[in-house]
Length: 368
Image (cartoon, rainbow, N blue to C red; front, top):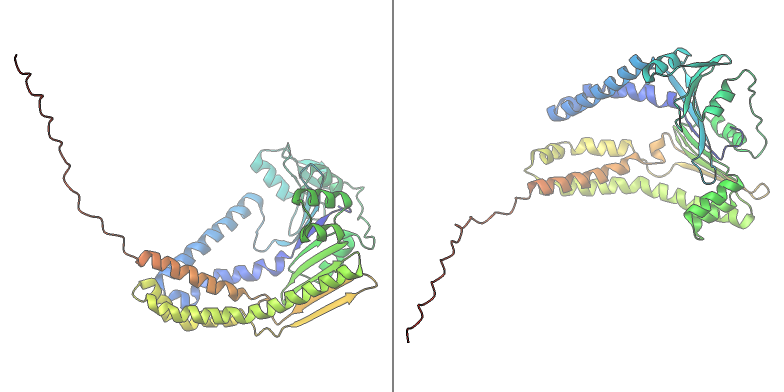
């Protein structure tokens, strides 16, 4: 889609296989095995994931843990209508995948060029696989055009969404979003949001924007329409970096406060188990947070009105602390335990029902 308003890219190969392997062996960890209740929960979770993987492989022939390399979604905003999109998925895929899916959904596959596709009908997206093993999902016309032998790779003119996407994907991100909205898309978005505010201002004035997540940090680029606006975005980026540095230290302090306070709830078996594992929890917090001294580079080019930002650490969690979720989990855990440990109010004994007395008969009238 050469005129896409937005593009989303995911590198599945750098995420799924390694994490799936860790998930499969999670139950063998000594910390998990020593807690029967936790071991049971983990075992059940792994079993459900394995079952879903097996079902997908038996029905489509795709092993979700190993067969998908990456996926890229292209979308275009159409005023007054739903967005048009098409996704390209790369991996160990063949046209036999479409044959399996067609049989499952009871649709007739159609050969287009060297590939095969099926149409679900109505507004549902079509599915197809090219002769070189790229799976497509999206608008039927776009899938059909891509499968045709006459299709050619669209150009990547400077400043286009495809050009920015090519630059970003070349940096091998785990996840990336590229945005370069057309005039019609900007008008549609600002009309739906309404009013004059920061969001509508950013949508109106931006030339392009990208945001990427890497295995060792994050980064973003921004193209503006004036030097003053570029300076404002640079200041916001500096503030975002400052917040990320502070967010590395805060979770450690919060975790220590919460773990110190949890002793007040001693007596519940779940709380007592957590108290015994304070040291393990703190190790997790320290493993998934840093000291805030990650590298940050902010490059501002007034001539090109371009801003490039890259924050880099040894790991992603040294830039974006995953451990910030642990204090929140502890707060939720303690709140839940407090509710469970609070005794229910005693109900007063039931009184026997009150039987109303019969009304007195009226006095007989006096005779004259």
